[in-house]
Length: 460
Ligand code: ARG
Image (cartoon, rainbow, N blue to C red):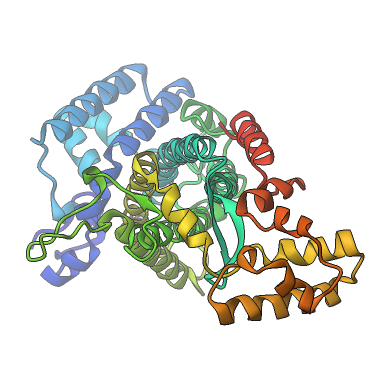
């Protein structure tokens, strides 16, 4: 085994095979090649502007790095495990191509600030991509909410029939969840958008570098303020994984509802062939696999959060090699979340409500019982607790006869409360119930349409 020519000066031997294997990150951190090259372009520009390297060296570095980017993209770049990671693979190839100027690139920086600059750049792009998909999901939900602003369905608590709502109102609940999720992602983006480059190994550098210049060139709001924190912290990754987990949890709830609504007991919606799969043995099947996979994704996001937070816990300042383990969970989390949001938006776009089946659902579970109690309060002046009691007795009667509340005769009602009049039937239909719920944020179709309009203006 030969010693590493990137740092082998004080070494007389090379690493054991297993050492090389556990140490290498090139297998996964090659995903950072674009950001790594971008960072090196900005760093060499700054070194030349500050007179630390010559303009000629800078030009050679730029030309070499651009060629390397093309080699990587063409698949001709030879990634070497013995060069550990993307940073040393690129730098070593640069020296191979341009010689001495390539060897000057690493002046005033370290892999410690380099890697975390790369990851911040990478995650910033990933966040922008995810946010655009989250906006697409909101758009899809809003379109369907508008389309189904009047479509009646049972609303549930404890998954027991509770009160009638509209399908549009139900979908709008998710628009709000996604809005908060996007807010959390935006907070995360803001805090990560500081540039660690130039913190060097941990203490800063004696070269006259300009960290403000590199920060601006890379689109950061400014340089990070403390060199030790710069190379020793990963909370921006944890913050993304926490926000991502919350979003994945929200998506999984909608996914579970899609699975439920697709089942033949509910049959509240249908999905087209584009978002379902068949069974290899049961010819009648149309399975909501995409929804089930979205339902499963929080496992990966939360797993990544646990993984990285456990890795960071108790680490002394500053960089420790442990931190190399941040990347695989992060990359997997981004890929999983990206798939989950895009698939959810696709399913929402695709789904069609089955209002007839939702109506059938409203015939069970006495969803207008609260409207009956409210009528007793409003018209007869009963205290709500007494009204609740009277209504309970009427529900028991209807249940015994296996009919809906609206099917009880006036005599049957009056046997429980003799002041009840015919007018009571006007509040016992789901349509009347929903139309009456006009409080701000309520399910009345007028409110739902207003909410759709406000959300389009505020969120998209
Ligand atoms: N591959 C390392 C990582 O992923 C880069 C930083 C290595 N720095 C060091 N001094 N060994 O974190």
